[in-house]
Amino acid sequence: MLKFNSQSPISGIMITAGSAIGAGIFSLPIAASGMWFPLSIISLIAVWVISYLATLMLLEVNMQYEPGTSFNTFTKEILGNTWNIVSGLSIAFLLYIFLYAYFSAFGNIAAHTYQLIFNKEAIFSQRVLSLILGGILAFFVWKSTKMVGRISAVLIVGMVISFCLTVSGLSIYIEGTKLFESSENILSKVSYIWSGLPYFLSACAFMSMVPSLYKFYGKNPKTIKTSLFYGALLSLLVYIAWLVVAFGVIPRTDFVAINAAGGNMGDLVNGLEQNAAGTAVSGLLNFFSNLAIVSSFFGAGLSLFDYIADSFKLGNGLMNRFYTACITFVPPAIASFFFPHGFIAAIGFAGIVVVFMFFILPFAMVWKTRKLNVVSSYRLQGGKILLIIVLVAGLIIGFSQSLSMLGYLPKY
Image (cartoon, rainbow, N blue to C red):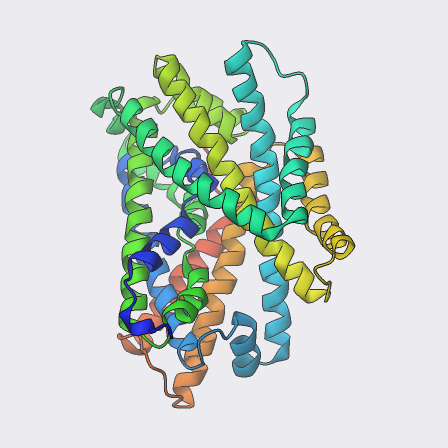
């Protein structure tokens, strides 16, 4: 019989980091181009700390129940059915947003890769490529979850190797003067911080792994905390390395054109290629980009597929899986066709949903259970003051994204 306490945290660390790192990493330089390197690192670390504390709030709630209890179960029992319904819709909406973003990015990076290989424009437009390639991946999800799992395992290994090789290859082109450019006073860059915070939050959304790690390790808060902390720290180091490469290779002024072009994955990759000579580096960069988008697509697609199947009580038969696949993939596919440059906007909008799901809900549940003196195997230290600080920080990030969407915040 499996003994949870004897398990190493290594698996949990990899699961946590793997869930956070994906195609969304390409949104970070775009979102942070206005504030630039020094301020982006400070802001990213601040968001990371707040996200980790929010994760521990969710852990406190989760550990009041038995391993394997779903997010929906303890939301319903603590806050009631209305909150549970809103929570469920938010999860579905968040996954749809991510799928739309990945459909959009898939077509964009595929068109760029085709042009790099054949030195001419792709036969199909980005809109059509999004439908074709996304449809192929959706087909794999429809046919077999086991097949997707095997493919994803290979993708993750390939993504790790290609990322390390890409960063190593690009590192020789990093210039310190670009990282710490002083064409503008640092105070003039502060105003760009607020619009970038939601993207950092989306990148640090490792809170969703809490129920899975609890199910895996059982009532062992020390091992779960270790997994969450080092997994989150690993993702933070990867993000910092990526920002160093992006901002050290591409001049800040070049991001004006990148953002104007839509700020999609292919636009950023093209900017890196233009400032880093060598077909080998370009090939590695495109290889990593394509693996990242396919891996993220499978992750979000399979999660939404399972959620839809459970919500509509659809079985695992071939036709039922076909109906589930249609409900899962057709809406974001259509959206990506009519709005092909929504990758950055979608990732930012997801930040608002993350605030609700992983800041407001956990705060409300922890606040209520502490008030009722409910016993938990783990308790976040810091008292009510820390809980309020985490909530307020999350609300500020959500409010910033709202202002950005309404056009009240500057965009670089």
